[in-house]
Image 1 (cartoon, rainbow, N blue to C red):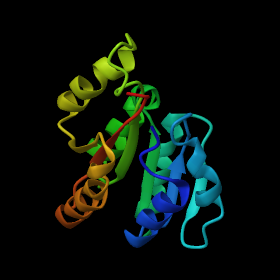
Image 2 (tube, helix red, strand yellow):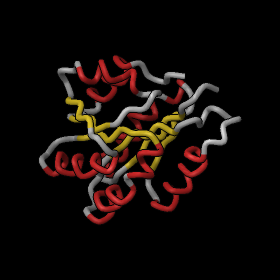
Image 3 (cartoon, rainbow, N blue to C red):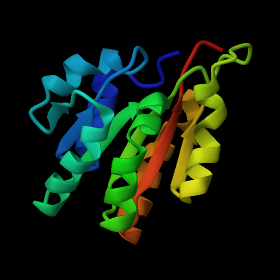
Length: 162
């Protein structure tokens, strides 16, 4: 299930004032690439490894930009040390959108969905779920709350066919 179309997500990001989307796409969010890459309102930055996304976003933030990190849960796990350094040691309010692989596939035994919330609980990160299309406005609401509070935040995007 595709929660957002490419043009729809580009519009949401641009309306939020996001200047850069730092990402490694997965199969669920990959269809957004053409809209993000073609945007005149924000810049898409592709990284080779998820661990590169957090320090790159940190540099953009320190330079006065408003970056957004976008990746899948497996990339979140891989990039944990970089996330820890940027969000906790440097105390930067970087926001991210994380696709939670197979969340909507109850029969899946994929451990990525099993560990998503426990890891975020351990880090104590403020988060918001988008599980169905009616939840889409929660992305902008949560992003704005986190920006206003000056804290990092994560929107978890449920992926996989129900």
